[in-house]
Length: 172
Image 1 (cartoon, rainbow, N blue to C red):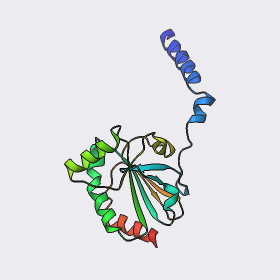
Image 2: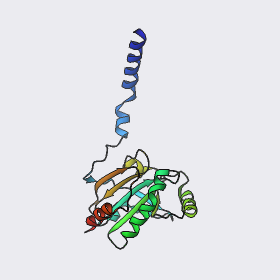
Image 3: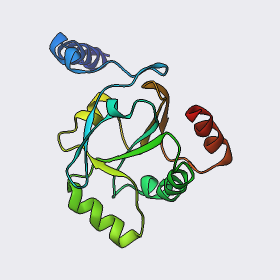
Image 4: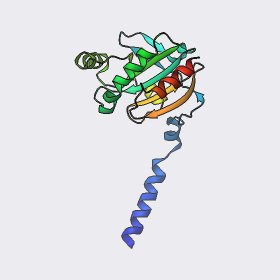
């Protein structure tokens, strides 16, 4: 019983010292659907910056992924089909790689896999932090007014008729 009581007291002390106001201040509030999407800047593979706010007027599918992630690789073909189906519409896919190898790793992956996405890098992880990602893939659907509509954790069949219909409806 004494051992159990000591463990409870030790756990309480650790819990009290682990959560400080300084730490809490660094943690962004969780994103809420139907709220403004955080403003971020990511870099295209040729190094050109893209500000999310510059995409107002377009529906944005913002996807965080990595070349080493099996579920990410699983959903890439459907994302490629989605991107192709939405060509010519007010739509933009922004696939942000969290790979530490950056542009060379992404280009090598595309070359060997035959896959291709409108890929961007987030070298300082500011975009990933702003969106509070906890893993990959995580995808955010943002409407033409910059409002975050949906957050999807994990892979999805982005080329399904229901999703295509939903996204096409948002572009009108």
